[in-house]
Every structure is written in C-alpha cells, then in structure tokens.
Length: 217
Image (cartoon, rainbow, N blue to C red; front, side, top):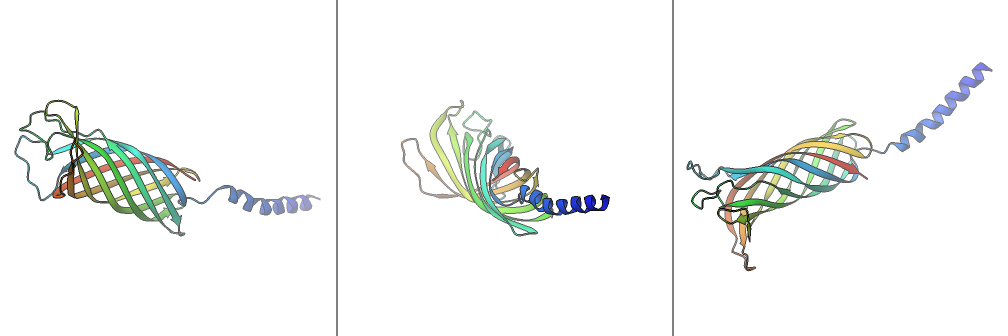
C-alpha cells in the first residue's frame, strides 16, 4: 500500500510540473512599458572650445519620462525595438546675456528617441545589452534674466548609443539601469511667430545615467 501511494504521488508531480511551468511566462520577450528616471547632462562637443571662464559649460538636471518596446527572446540572446518620450529639469544657470550656455539661456525640453537593442542573457533573469538609434530633442529659449519661455526653441537631431543591464523581478516586472550617450549634429530654430530657420550644423553632447522600472505583457 505504501509503495502504491508513493508511486501515485510521483505520477501526480510529473503531471503537475508542466502545468506550473506554464504559469511562469518567459522573460525578456513581448511588449513592455516602463517609467524612466535619472541624471541628464548636455554640453559642448569635443570640437567646441567655449571654456572662457564665464559661460555655462553644461546644463544638467533630472531626466524623467516613459518608454515602450517589444523584445524577442532567441534563447541565449534578446533583440528588440524601443521608443521613449522624456523631459528634463536641466537649464542654464546664467542670467546675464553676456554669460550663456552655447545656445543662449535655455531649458532642456522634451526628447524623442526610437531605436533598437540587442543583448545576451548572463543568466535566466539578467540581460546585458547595447542599444542605438535616432534622437530628436528641444531646447526651450528663456528670457535673459527670468525662467519665462519665449516660445522660441532649438530643435536638435542626432544619434544615441548606450548599454545597460536589465533584471527580471518576475515574469512580468523588471528593473534596469543604463548609460546613454547622444550626439547632436544638426539643428534648426522654431521662432515664436511660427517661422523656422534653415538647418545648421552643431556639435552637442548629451550624457545620461538612468534607471527604469517596467511591466512586460
């Protein structure tokens, strides 16, 4: 009788194991959304020397926003596409027209990003990845000695690369940390009256260190 009970329990466990496994969905695959928070710094590029002892060499602040993407788990590797909408508290600290950031007295505005990423699974719950894509950001022009926006803005086009680590908390939630570098090389001005300038070349760098918490569907 005892042997019969043991055999019955073992058989039940064999049948139940696949059922339990189905309840835990695969990680790092499918659509995802996330909240983003981190450090943001924009400054002159390597081809620009604006260190005159007066002007702001950089503007930095808090980056915040949302992101979405879609990943495909290939087994030991993951590939995907993603997009972001972020904003920032960074702005020029100078109030004198003679002492300005490279674009004048400005506030970092919204940033749009679309790109792709690829990575390898360091273990079943940890993804190490690199990323790259297109970024378009805005610098809102401020009145010289106030924080009032003038409805004039610089629009900057560039590219972004980065790397990060994502950790699956469970089948649906995840957290990640990453570093991103953006290079802006083209810009135009949107004036308050609705006119737009011709495009002109620039050399502007942006560095970000961000953390994200998200949900995978």
